[in-house]
Image (cartoon, rainbow, N blue to C red; front, side, top):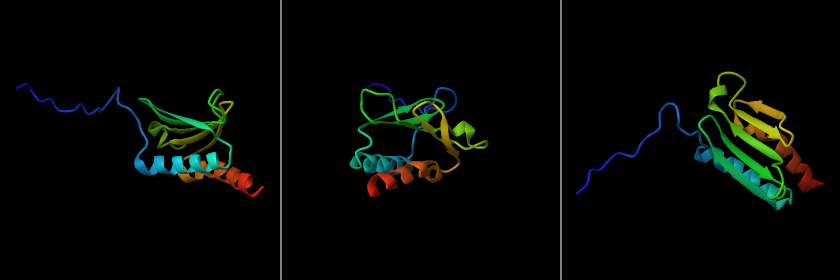
Length: 114
């Protein structure tokens, strides 16, 4: 028999940042509602060593309309969550995911109610 090696657990440089289950559920719930409203058509997720990023696209062949970014290194400064617009401008930044998603939630209310 061969040697059994433990699964490598990344701690330190080179590890990936990700969304936990509750965060991803909140983001995917918003995504599903935006798809139902006809505003978004596609998404992408990237996990890097410094950030986890969720991109939302109007159409798959375009640049992302919004980017939701989690950067734990900024946790003690302006907050680890950021909502970034299509042109790269930070629209909202904060310590909690809910308030950062609030501008999109308000936009969704206008799309559904309007």
